[in-house]
Image (cartoon, rainbow, N blue to C red; front, side, top):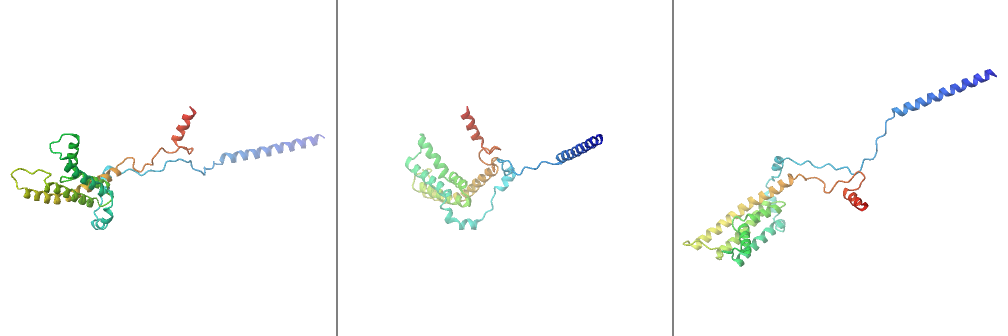
Length: 239
């Protein structure tokens, strides 16, 4: 009887030791195991934005090589663009206002406005029209400057030849008119090409040096997928 009890106790101790050994091994395996990396990425992460170039790099990159042959071949398409028609219409309207208003000696608002439009869109060099053409042109800005300059020269020559612009006393009217017409048709296209190209370069320079260039519009979404504006609206409703 006593031997049976000792055998039972020895068996119980052996089972206890085996269970403790298995428990220690299981705990060691749990300590060594590394946590698995999440397979899903959090939503709403900001997309990488293009780096803004430096002022010097933007200054150089804004220049475009002249491709006169390609620009001339595209002339039938270019004449239908607003880069040509907007400054041309402004030049014609300025000429018509000068004829109708006759602002010489007038100090009212309409007379001042007419003189302003006349000086910038008609008188050689008509820098107002060619600057607008250069800013609106997607290509061939120099060609737009020549075309707008020719229109301005024609309008200015019309005003001179028709006597809407007074001539200096004791001078030959025909000789003066001829010189003014020749100078207008010579200088307006050349100066127009230069100023239109400068305006196109300046537009590209501003676009390249813009600090918000390449940045996505709107507020970035939150990690839970909701935008900040939606969260603010919900917060206002809860109040």
